[in-house]
Length: 559
Image 1 (cartoon, rainbow, N blue to C red):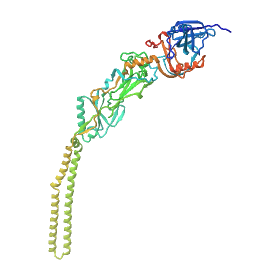
Image 2: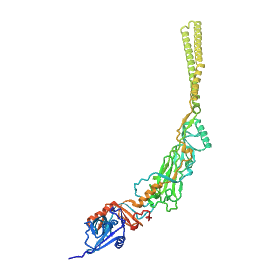
Image 3: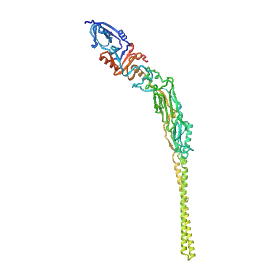
Image 4: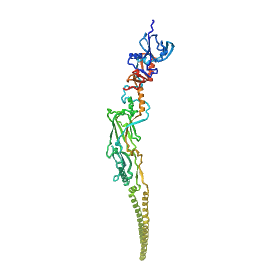
C-alpha cells in the first residue's frame, strides 16, 4: 500500500545542547518539550520521505550555506506514528545548489525522555533535596588549603597560676602524711602560693624552712605551677566548671557568604580548641545539639592536683553524648620548677645529733680501755698476795723471815700495779681525745665545703610567664579563596552521596546534577539507546529547568 510522504522535519538553531551530554533539558510534559524545540526552528519541512533513525543522514532541500548556523534537528514520521525524534546536527554536506545532507546523532536523552524510568542504584554525587547544616557530611576529598582563624576567645579564669610545693612532711609534722585532694587520696600534701613576686618570696621562705628542718629536706617531692582555679585544698572534691561559648556558628569566610551549607561543616569550618602548647582538638559545629541557634556551646573543665597536673575540657551535648569525655581536650605540660638547698645547713640540721653521739661513743671507748688496764693491775696484786701466803706456810719455822718476805712481795705488787695504772692513764690522755675531735671536725669541714645542691627540674616557663596557659577557642575555616572555589564546585556538581537511591533530576530551582555508578533504567526503547542512557548517567549529567539558563551558574540555585 502506498503511503504518501508525510514526514515532518524541523531544523533548529541555538539549542543549548551538545553531544557530550554534560547538560540536558528537563521538561515536565511532552507538550512542553515539543513546544520549546519547535520554537527554535529555522526551517520547517513537511511531506518529506520516511527518515530512518539509524541511517544518520537527512537530505533536505535547503542550501548547505543556510544550515551552518543550525545545531539541532527534530523529525516525525507522521505516517507511522506521532513520536518526535531529537538529534544533534553533526555535519552539513553540500549536495547541489538547492540540496544538502544533514548528518545527525540521536539525542537519546530528549528522544526517550518520557519513555524510561530510573530505578535505585549507587549515586556517586548529586544535588541534594535538602541542605540543612549537618545533613550532608559525606567526605569530598577536596583540597582545602591553609586554615585561618576568626573570633578567638579563651577561658580567662585559667590564666592565673599558683606555685605548688608537693611535700611528704612539713616542719612540726610527722614523717608522713597525705590528704584528700580533688576527689582522690594523695600520699603527699600540696602547699600553694600565688605566682607573683610576693608569692614567690613566701614560697622561698617555706622551702628554706623545709630544707633546714631535721629530716625534712628530702620530703620535698616537686615544685611546679598549675592554674590557681584548679588547686584543690585538703578535703576537696573535684571542682567542675562550666564555660559557655556564645553565639551561632559563623556564617561567613572573611566576608564571603557561601551558598552551599556544606561549607559550614567540618573540614571547611569548625571550632578549634588549643592550648597553644601542643594540645589541640577540633569540634564540628554540626555535631552540637544546642536546641536552638540562640543557645550557647557548653563545655565542662576540671583539673587534678598532682606533681604533673592536667586540665580537661569536655564538650556537652556533642555527637549524641550529654558529656563527651572521649573527645576532651587535655592541657598538660605545666612548668616544673627547680629549687636549691644549702647542703651544709641541711646536713647540720639533719646530722647534728649524730655527730655528738659519735664523739661520746669514741670517749666512752677509751674509758673502757683504761678500766681494763686498772683491773689487770689489781689482779696482779692479788696474785702477789697469794704467793706471799704460800711462802709463809712453807717457812713457818722462821716467822720473822716469812713476815719479811710478805712485806717485800706486797710492796713489789703494789709498785707494779701503780706503774700499770699510770701507763694506762697517760695513754688515754690528750692524744686519744684529740683524735676524736679531729674526726668530727673533718666531717664538719667536708660538708661545709660542699656546694648548694639544685633539686627538681626546670621546664620552659615562657607561656606561663605570659600568663597565657589556658584553652583558646577560635572559628577555624578555609580561606576565602578556597571557599569560593569549593562553593562553585558544589554549585555545579552537588554533594558526594555514595548511597543507593533513585537519582534526582529536578530538586533545585534552576539545575540538578547527578552522577551514578551502574545506573538502572527500565523503559520502552531499543537496547542500545537504553545502554547509552545508563552510560550518560554514570558519566554525570546536569538537568536544566529553563533552556535560557543553561550554563548560567550565577543563578541562586539554593533551596
